[in-house]
Picture 1 (cartoon, rainbow, N blue to C red):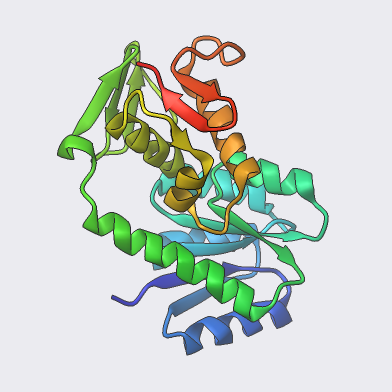
Picture 2: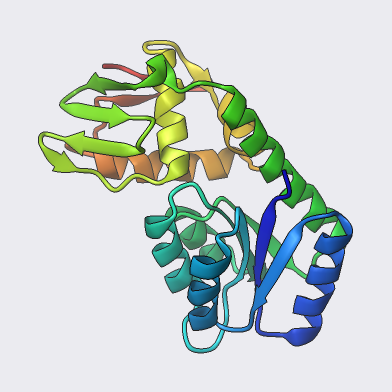
Length: 228
């Protein structure tokens, strides 16, 4: 299978360099120079992965990320952020980005991140979802085939990473899952802070009182568990 990558970058020199690098790795590549063009190209090209710059004309990377994540739940999104923009990284992850790369970056680092995401995608196609269907707990119903979630009759807006985390929690209900295991599930290049951000965001969506969670519990020094 030849994976497709959409590069969204307003600097032509960087855009051309990334395209050449990825095409040499036998990826099918298309490019966009601004946020509005990115959305058009995504609909036409239907990429598996998007390299998405934050600062762009017409529509910034955060807005594009929100739209793409809602429209294409399984799309992999890697944000390109400027050095030192910690808040941008956190915001990108919270609105649905899968990973981020800080500029300036080496082509080796970029390829490592992209290849890691595609290895994860390949593994997902080999591993069936929980019970081949879904799960139910605490008034929440999950469909892992359709990527649909409902709480007390109302739909929940969960992204792909949040479904993956809940899938693992449901498979191992009541067991403590370490941050290291969650890192391997999401992306081996992630870290504990990234995992904690995902858990915070997930609690905001599924808990009645996110400040006092009753479903996803923190186990000091160990990780998290689903208490359903």
